Image (tube, rainbow, N blue to C red; front, side, top):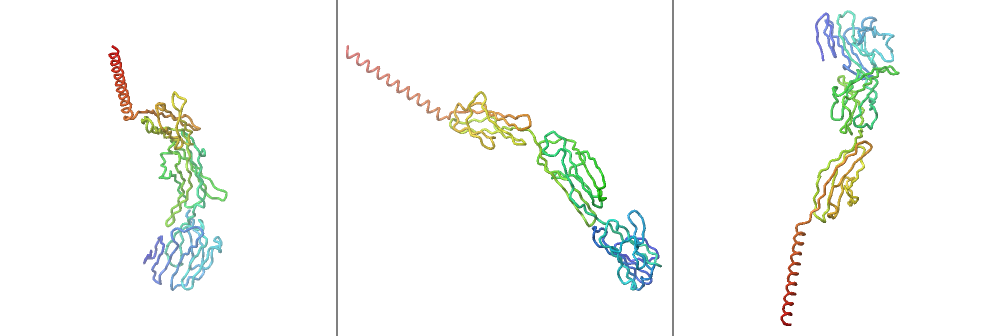
Length: 370
């Protein structure tokens, strides 16, 4: 941005400025509005055609963020309060150049800088801030530490140190932000051993954990945004929640024909994994093969003795035990009934024919004797 002004008095903030005067042009420029700590910044002030070298002819002054005004340089001399190892003047002052360089900038260097030339009543500032990224990701802990048990209160604590401007702390559950109406927050601010600012956020969830919180990824995010910089650091934890088993029976009744295989299933959900057992009610006999982590009982070659009520039980370290039941029916195939009936009829007919033949033979023998 360049600004051209013809005036005797001016107060303005500029990034780059060219100010017209009767004897020439005052050119002032500075660094970007925000720089990273440790970088080098340069302020340029030139007035072509004018000698800026005499003592007191020109100075750089700074207005700190708290409003305090200090002279950084006067003529060719850097003020003793500003270390020469970092603050340097350069340029051809006799030719109108009077530039200031600051190496390894710190937060204390931020402010509004002004090149003031004797005899020119212009107040023109170039301003910059110093960004100090958070050095390390935040520390995230769960209270109590995982694994949690269903029904417990979940407390998350996140802390970080350093960073300027002050970072923003936010909570996320892996798919989106955790909104403030879901928890109560306590914030503690401290000063670290090296003077760095330390912030700790503890949130208490309003609802206790459920089985559906198992496997959820919670994260604490610390973000800084100061144009043109954006820094984000985060830490996360995957929640482990223990809950008792539940049993779902997809088919409560299973019908098979005699000789076929019967498949009985109990779908079990638990954490940690449950121990699953199958029993047949009112019977000590249980024949079959277990599959799918014991969630499936397969009865090969079912017969009438396999008919009845089967029960699957699931239990882990948390009560209560979960139970499901499956009723098994074993039917006779239609063609088996037909074959049986035909056999009975055939035997009956043959028996009748044989009996009739015996009667006829007996009658014949009696008549011959008579």
